[in-house]
Length: 351
Ligand code: ASP
Image (cartoon, rainbow, N blue to C red; front, side, top):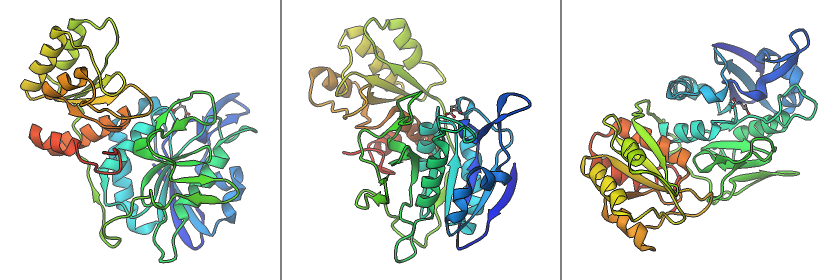
């Protein structure tokens, strides 16, 4: 990992590069995309010099395509932010788009009581290409991460994704497009800010810490013994049993239809019951890109509830997974895990 000082002035940001398309540029010799040296970021994005802030950069080694992201990277990011927390006013994380929603969700749970912005961004086109979206995304992220109110508090003390002029709560966001600049959506929560001629903040949605002077709690314990079952017509008992009753599995996210509905066939419900009775946590999230699970509307939902399934409300799958990793990492007791799943911890669900 390397650290470079880029601009020295008033407020201060740490730009953390983990990999992904945004930090690539065409190497004329190799004729291939290669990561560029962040000590030269001002050459690539001279607009950054116009901000009244100091931007230091930190580059992970090795840089990775975000398809290779593992919880170890999240722990390294949390440790880095913890170590540098008092030295900076905000953090901008450059990350591949493919798993950005997972990483942003994870950090939102791993840092409790955040008082400074942690903004993830990336791009669909490398920063060194003429039509890149990387510059806009980076410049907006820097401006938002440095923004403060009249009392000197951060305007957005949250883990967010900033992409294509929208600032979205990280744990509400999903990647929805692989080749359009509008790659992310937050269907169940309006954006926290929109960048147009000026940046308009949706201040009544932005979460404010209970105590600005308290240091956040940095959680690094994660239990990843979680699997995901997407319900579909034709699903077989063997497949459902393999996923739900695996010995190593502590929790299963079931992606159900509509408002949280699943087959009512007896074989299906009896496997769910067996898994729940053996102490596994089963969390219901919808396959729909918007809307919420409500297991009280239809008989099928009621059956699941009766079998011991917990509602994920309007959670994204990415956020549900990250929340489970975090909660299971700190709780052995199934009842406590279920109670925390039902609780809105970081603005990830609306009840
Ligand atoms: N595969 C790349 C990654 O997620 C795509 C990107 O950066 O947008 O790292």
